[in-house]
Image 1 (cartoon, one colour):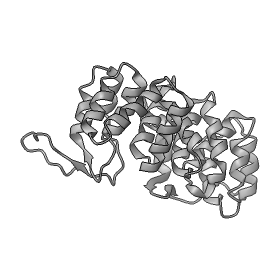
Image 2 (cartoon, one colour; image 1 turned 180 degrees about the horizontal axis):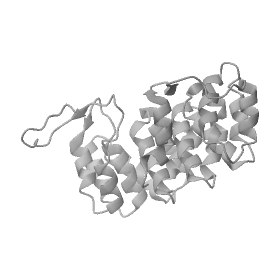
Image 3 (tube, rainbow, N blue to C red; image 1 turned 180 degrees about the vertical axis):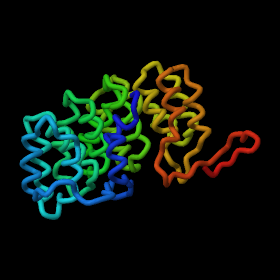
Image 4 (tube, one colour; image 1 turned 90 degrees about the horizontal axis):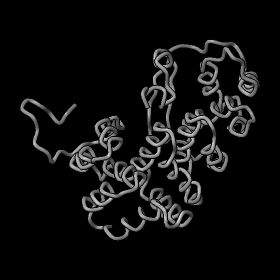
Length: 276
């Protein structure tokens, strides 16, 4: 993943025209100015269903302001199930701004985890995290399977899934993943979790030392997971990993929610502050 904007589906141009906010309910894209087209919501939808080569993402941002207002949320399902890969990518992107108001579409989002476009898969992982309910254990497991994706950006999305999932989401994902793929790294994750449930540090160490990269990536997600606060000593365990991917991503791990609180148990360099 060489470009964070690419992985997050927020381009440098987008950042000049809108502010992106994160909250418990989902993401909010607030335009800095008025819509740059005069189409109705339904006209935008038809355009997104038949995209042209000159569509630059602006239309999707404008449509986001109409979705659930002048255009029913159910219209999003048309984008997610389109035969056009660009339309599906737009649908997955728009879904990352929703929450359980589209929980009925989690099955369609899970289907996008097999999409050829890594951006679409990345957004599908995030959308499942935001939109799933306790009835979606199998789909949560499928999002966790992205830890084994061939694309680094999608794998990072799955690591973020582990970091930010609610306790019940992570439990359901872990248990169903182990059940669906026995004798794999995912069953190893469940086994280590069960053995070291009361020893967070030992659990992270054991997973970071595991032979399977998938298990080490899961450990990285655990290391940055908030336990009332984010414990930087756990992140430091991941930074010291012999796995170059884990060490690199752990170094970048402070790309975190603005609302996270970090607890330092490490010596601080002279003149440094815990308040950034």
